[in-house]
Amino acid sequence: MSSSTDSERPYHHGNLRQALLDAAFELLATRPAAQLSLREVARAAGVSHAAPYHYFADRDSLLKAVSTECLRRFLGAQQDAVARATAPRERLLALGLAYVGFAHQQPNAFALVFDAQLCPPGQPNAESAPLIAANEALLRDCVTALRPTDGPPDASGDALGAALWGTVHGLAQLVMGGHLPMDGVAPALRALLGQGTLDRA
Image (cartoon, rainbow, N blue to C red; front, side, top):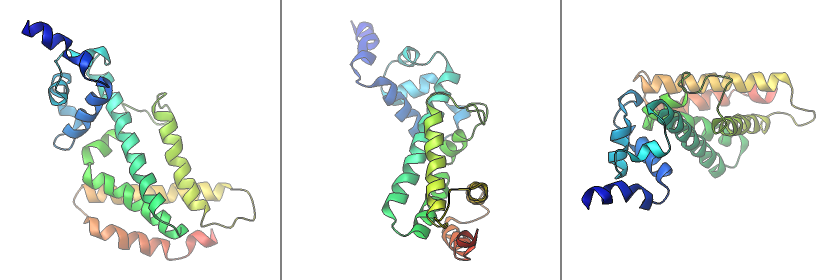
């Protein structure tokens, strides 16, 4: 009777797939993705060890889904931060701080977002593609708000966005590596954004 109950338990869990992704995300707080296993994620979600196989054929397919979940949360953190800011320059600052803040608080999840084996650059899967597009649009909108509006967006605006992304990503890597304290990020970004280069670009 007990074995039958265990085998049926996943079907009464509600949104099992999301529960497994949530459990995997929580596990990433204490270990890198390389140490995750289907069995461990099932245990953390409170379901049978066979439950993940209803949604994920193997560990690689689980990690791809977890990578997308991390990307979703990464994007959400940036969107929430930008939504709380008002002035254009403060919105761009909030975006950068949220980007680095996520890397600081969730370094294993951040690393998974940029794992080229799980999500090859330029070849996102169907779930990741709209999230990546939304993240790019968020940066573009924040940069555009600080640029002259008397003409259509041009290549220089895209180049400026790429430069800012590279800067913020570099700051995130420095923070994750212990080379820069998190409280040094805001002054660095304010120094960069306060020089007026965005308005003149």
